[in-house]
Image (cartoon, one colour):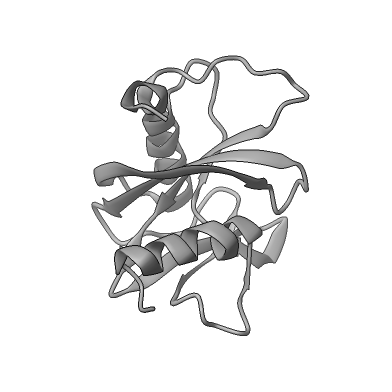
Length: 147
């Protein structure tokens, strides 16, 4: 994926194609922020969401984090893009992830039920497959999370 691919508007996709999602990997004190929705309060995933028509990935992420956490991105940088399965919808998903910090302490709002900080080794916390299969291993490899 080129830099242009990550920042240009997301094209109208085939409705039968993968769900397009943009998310934030926010790490503080070697723990990853995960959130849950009111619709599934026991399942945690990265904050973010689906683009509105004409939005590029960073615009989507800025809007979603403002709505969900009442916070703004600080120094976002592209981390990864991959295909997975959307945990709530159970359909194929194309996920673009930016590593970022926030300008203030996040407060769950909108459709969010909870916010947690995890090392990824919490047996009691149910994490979305994209987090366990892709994000946690990547953040461990980069040294952002404990190995």
